Length: 264
Length: 233
Image (cartoon, rainbow over all chains, first blue to last red; front, top):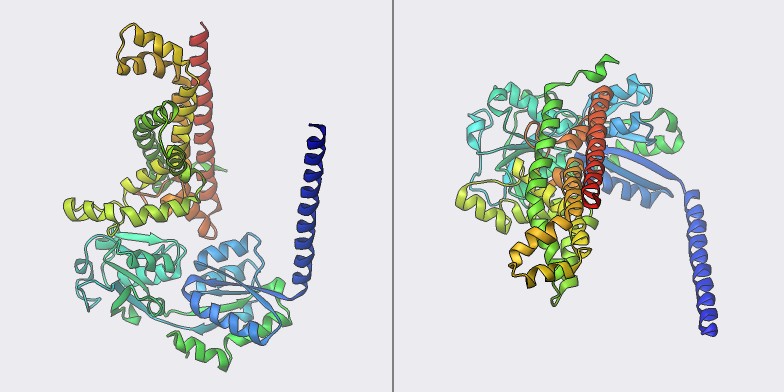
């Protein structure tokens, strides 16, 4: 009995020792990693695929670790306001960059339009609807709700709602909106077939096999769509500028175009 | 300071909606949880631990996973949702019902656990005594077991109410965030948090949220004490 007790104790000690070794190893490797340069990029959700690809290319060419955070541009602006410290912030509209400039968090001269896109009306791939005209009684083209980003903080939802207003459908649709937390969530709801229609960026649809475009919203119905890159004041260094310049480089241009964005 | 007390119409609707979702959820969950709790406390059967695991799953699953699974099952193309949509023309997902269903799934394990534990503590000899005196199983349950397990039932009810008030992850993915329809208190707080420059509005909702949760806990404590008192008296 006593022997077993002693054995148990020994085993426990070994276990604790192993645990300590593991923790120490992780602690040390982490330290080594943080010596490699890290760059944090906040970007509107509509750029998820293209910015991920750009970051991968940039990482392969430079000794740098790029960390990405995608959410609605309004959400990201709020996070930065509350103390998040990215180096580069890419917003899907001018509004949230200007908001951060007013708070003295972003370098004003760094605000630059990188690319543009259009809004598209989408339906699930297996839908019988093939083509509609946005200006032809749009609210009667579908039943139930319309999936868009929450206009309060999702730029894609804001553009969509502005187009709805310009089309004169605001009153008919105000109670028929299904607001999503970012543009990709708005897309997902249509992919799942929960609603018959949604309005998202044309460029969101290229990657999805589960939805199809039935109409492109006329560009003059909403303010011009622009993705604006900017540099944070606290992170205005050489590393940041290099990546920031890369976004508008010739090499990046091909990637933007491949993903369907227009460059002026 | 006065800004802190000026609730807008949409904030009021979020508060009302939260309360009605929580109340309906607690009322529906209670009888189900009593039945399942009794079953788990008194019966032994093959695969019991698996059944228990499944029932308790929403307790440990990330709520957003629960929400996504609910969407797959109750969505227009899910096997239950499809039936309702095609036969009755009812869309469950992204409606008020969805908010209630999400709350039920998430709070069910909590209530069942609480009720089951208190039923397990009921002395089975008392039940047997009643039976030897000729009481039917149903009568034994309603006159012996349930009254003796009352503290667990009450705290279960309040737990389910309080948990539904706080439900966020499953609700936003399964019921959406529609103002006046599915935007409950936590979702309204989340929405306000996303929009830069809305600190006052966020704070107003946070204050209500804290007060409601606190009241629920105080009520649970108060009722529990009364039950214990009436038993010892």
